[in-house]
Amino acid sequence: MMRKKAVIVGLAFLLLMEMPACSMDQTSLSSVDEAGLVETPASAEGKQVRMTSGEVEVLITLNDSKAAADFVRMLPLELTLIERNDFAKGMTLPRNLVTDEETTREYEIGDFGYWDAGPDLAIFYDDIYEQTIVPVVPMGKAESGAENMRNTSGTVRLELISDDENRAKNG
Image: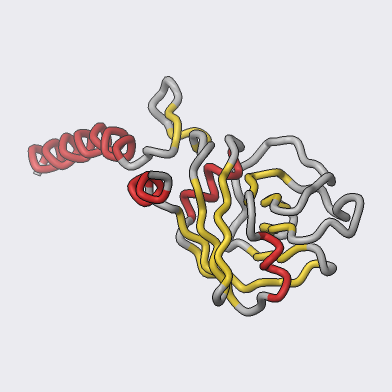
């Protein structure tokens, strides 16, 4: 009986020792601290997200914020669009994103941001206001096509564009 307990304890110890190694292999978008524990997600800078609603497709290039990196880990997503005062489309995420970035109320057409009190995303399609009502964490920008979100409704699909697909598109 004592020998059986010792074997079980030994196996449990070995399994615990292997767990950090296993989890490190699955954290390609996360950084690891000195103790081997997963910290905040690594940068998503330059990664592209395809936003599709009906016939409208917008490509968003993400920045290096922690919120953007955490968002990438959630993809793909299908979310309901919410009209935001005739200048942006909002989408409520299933959970808050990791972030400690500065917020802003400044925006331009094509800006893609995050409001953690929602937790909501926003894509700005018009610049009729000087600034947003709520502070937003900038996460990226659509170079073109954001204006086309004006007449969309229903659901939107957000998916990461693979590096291979991105290379094929860009030649």
